[in-house]
Amino acid sequence: MVCLLIYVFVSSFEYLGHILTDNSRDDSDIDREIRNMFIRTNTLKRKFARCSSDVKLILFKSYCMNYDSALWTHYWTGSFKRLQATVVIIIYLFIRKCT
Image (tube, rainbow, N blue to C red; front, side):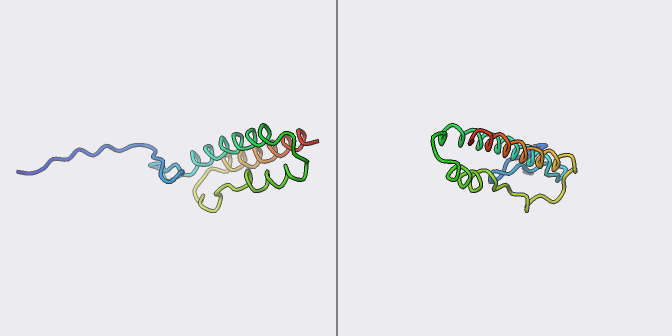
């Protein structure tokens, strides 16, 4: 008897926190990182609102600025430009709230 297996192919899959797609592009993983950067920044603003500006900046650098850009090799330039714009926006929003 021959065993018939049906394989289901998916367009994207999350593995170890990163999104892998069927076209081997990293655009969806960059979008995931953009969402996570906003979430981490808003969490910092909310939880450490009463800390000094120096403490907030140290926390911000260690907690929000650690994205995995070394793993991204195939992406559209628009995706990476959105990531760069996001970094500028969250820095502006976080520092504006610090002062």
